[in-house]
Figure 1 (cartoon, rainbow, N blue to C red):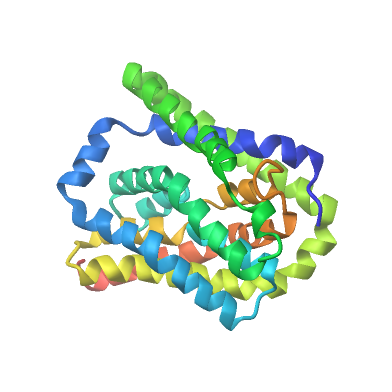
Figure 2: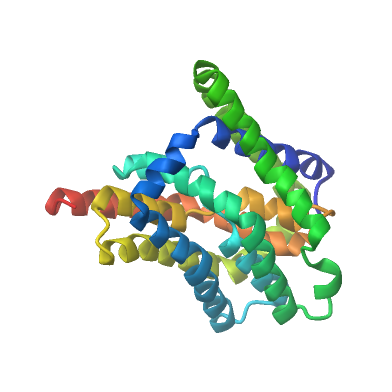
Length: 292
């Protein structure tokens, strides 16, 4: 599988636009509110940073995925929550403000935690390539530029002109969707046969990982006494990962530069919507039967 030139040019731009859009939804007060009621945030971070990589490792070992696909799954597990988590949280009547804050906190922390998980995965599954393909200091600087800088710019725009930030939000969402769709179409047209040949090998792992992440992200906060709407928000943020970021890291020649590692994130992006929709349906039905 090789990367279409168009996709290679657009991927960093897509991530920058998505991260800028996230920044325009944030204020410093959002972080303060989460810290004043930290239980839900702590549960979510514990699941995201500690439990999910172990869960994902168990899945890829049990399913005997090839090394590159196994590394791709671990990369996905280490990626922060996706921006669509807030949409599904809204549909399931979750605390959307908490979703946005959790996504932001996870995104900031991922600059440190994601390289650790990926480098450990490379050392375990691809030891011969770990030294040359890992995420070192130069790649971490690149992650900061791709992730944190656009978020910071977006927050500055929000702080200086909230009305402008609100007007930009639908435009940013539209551009992001259009860019991602264009990349997906270009990839399928360029290497469709190879991509679909890998679908069966990694599809089961992606579905199991997505469903178990959604369930874990909701169950752990509930067991810790977090109320329903906030537990829903944590579940969506833990269960819906930023697959576009994972694809970018896998494909970018300045980072991993291995298209095969990107396959799990591409497959995951396809199955996330039906899995999250199922979670919304189950949570909504539960809420109708028993107030949460």
